[in-house]
Image 1 (tube, rainbow, N blue to C red):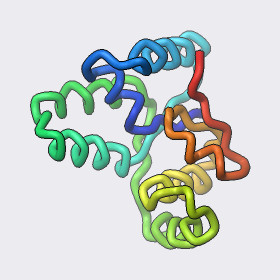
Image 2: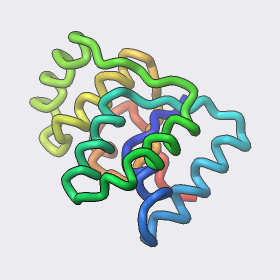
Image 3: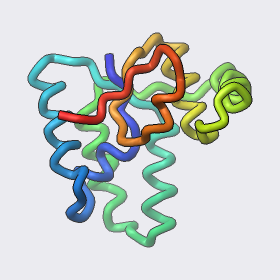
Image 4: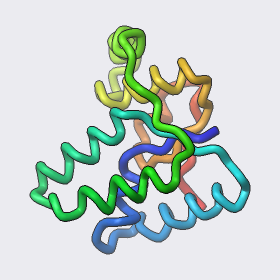
Length: 133
């Protein structure tokens, strides 16, 4: 099982970028291998927040649809995830609050891998980041 971070669909749908082709190929490779891909409601919120912030509201629906089209499940955020994320940010100063919430959700659902170009996840033990083809 692989957790999909917000930057994957954003690179796929977004403007030309060095990670665009890599993101597409990573997703295609996982689909071909029959990998189960998941995400969380927080990832959807990140997409909304980022695209509103950069005034790319036109990209919201395509990006959300791209993410929902690639994942098998969207995990909710629960009280226990927020509490665990508050512990994680104290233990791993490199992780942002959002990243800590992803880690908490991944721990709760026993998801060992994350597809992301965010190298900060490398600082957390027991999570393997998938980022190159």
